[in-house]
Structures are given as structure tokens and as C-alpha cells.
Image (cartoon, rainbow, N blue to C red; front, top):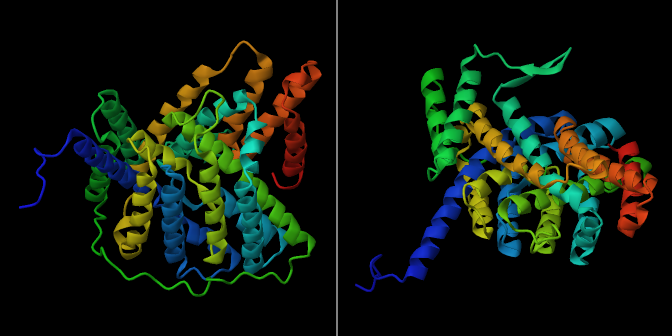
Length: 435
């Protein structure tokens, strides 16, 4: 009594419930595509000498809260967590490269986050994005697609390093590689048939096959999270006026500025969240949420937070609102108690999702004007170098520089946004010192 049955619900109420269910379904797939960060990042940060015992806990808390901030504040389905690229800069570019302690590196990342947050509040990050030509913005989606696909091909063992040819085909006699290839074809088949929950079905099937064939079905499912007091609030500002510290701040700032710009633009284009000028609707709120999250990571003892390119996976599964990010955030927090079973999900199960989503995102190249070299070469730089330097910021920088230089030498500098020249000079400096 007093409970509305499904038959008595209004069509609008049923539609809202259905959409919320789709957002949760998308969030589950997005979370499982990103959960690897809980196990990869601690080993990466451990190279700095950081105590790694509670890093998985810290990363899960940072990712969970950051996703909640994005969902509530910006209402966007973006997944946020400490990123591998900026994490590698933290470890090898700042601590091991500049000789700063990991505590000082956290302080430098925090300072960069303050700058980013202030720029977001003032709306200046959107102003900077307007200086990026539409051709470059169109290339963002395809560049992210190739980046994601290459990540999936690597994780699935379909592409491996080679000292002579740089990369080559993986060993197809290995069970894991065969399973990854099967997974790509399975998910592509389901997507082509428009099967609901295609990515979810593929993930479950591949995980089950891997567990059965390799006999690695987890026996422990629940555990208490390890404390992370050894890294919490350990920022050290004692070297704040030193040259290495200031250089680190600038490096974190540029990566934090460029990486989200490309990710938001590429994902916004994928989900149809852009206007005709390539501006993502509500992007400033997303930047503010990202800026807050960039502050949160160093405070809790981990490298800065970024918007994951894997956000494309839940978006392809139907996630369109902040509820997807909220659900992903809650799953990251819940993951604190289920790290054993989550760690047993193999890379070959998630890799095919990335490959298929990357292939879908490559459709962005169809919108490029292929007859104009002054547009195609910069776009190509964006697409190719994002993937093959494994650095989104580098791809933007090279594409932007090529665009401005070509238009200038062709005598068409009046067609370039005035601030583009300022941004290009800054990007030249970025590549020279931090790229």
C-alpha cells in the first residue's frame, strides 16, 4: 500500500528510472575499465621512495571524491583519477629528474593545482581553449581514439615493443593475446548488432573465460583498506623558491592545462556535448571540478588527478550525465573493501573495450578538410603524436605550433586567433623544457 507500481508510474517517471539504470550500467563498465589505476599507480609512485602500503587506499579515495565532485558540480560523465602520464612526470621528471623529494613534488603539484583552480574560477581556461583552432579541436577526438586504442592493444598483448621496428604484433600463440583478439571481435560484433550492454557483456564474458582457463578465480573477495597516513598531508614547501621547484610547478601547470582541454573536447564531441564552434557545454564547471580534484590529489598524498580518456567507455555505453561520474565515484570508494577481487580482473578483459571505443572515436577524422595541407598536417600531428608519444599534452603542443607556423608562412596570419600566438610561444617553451 502506498507504493507506486510500474504499471501506475507515469511515462516520465519510468523514463527517469530507465536512464538512471543506464547511467549505473555505464558507470560499472567505466569503473572496471579504470580500476587498474589502483594497482598500477602505487608501483609507479613507489619509485620515488614513497611508502606504498596505503597508496591504493589513497588513490581510491582521491578518485572516488574527484568523480563525485565532477558529477555533482559539472553534471558530466567524466571519470577522474590520478593519471599515469602526469604520474610519470611526477616520478621521473620531478623527483628523479629534478632531485626534489616526493614531499616537495606533492607541494609543487598542489601549487600548480591552485593556479589551475583560480584560472577556472575566472573563466580563463575557456578563453585559452577558444584560441585553439577548430581543426585542432576536431582532431582531439580522433587523437584520443588512437591513444585509447593503442593503450588497449598494448594491454591486450596485441602490440608489443620491438628494439628494431619499435612495435610489432604480439605473440598470437599466447592464450591471453588470443583472448584479447577474440574480445575485440566479440564486442565489435555485439556493438554492430546494437545489443544492449554490449561492453558489459564482453567484459563479463572475457573475465569469466580468463578466470576459468588460467585457473585464477579469486578466493578472497573482501579486505579492510590499508591506512595511508604515511602520505596524507605530507607536502613540503621548504624548497618553494628553488629553481627545480618552480620548474616542476610550471610543468604540472602545462600538463594540467592541456590534458583536460583535449580530453573534454574529444569526449564532448563523442557525446554530442559541443556547440558548432567545438566548445563543450558547461566546460567551465568541468574545469572547476578538475581544478578542485587537482588540489585533492597532492593533499591526500598522490600525484595529480586528470580526466581519464577511459571516460569514453561509459559514454559509449550510454552514460551522459553526472550520475555516471557519481556512480563511478561511489564504486571507487566501495572498491576500498574489494581490492582482492578487483585486482583479479585481467587486462585482457578490459583491453578490448579500449580498442573498440578507440576505433569508434576515430570517426572524428571524417570531419577534417582533407584538401588543405595547412589544416591536415597540424591535425595529423595531434592524432599521431598523442598516441605515439603517449602524451596528450605533447600532441596538442605539436599540432598547435604546426598550425600557427603554417598559417603565418602562408601569409594568412590574420585568420589565426591573436592569443594563439601567445599560446604557441608558451607551448614552444613547454616542449623545450618539459616535453
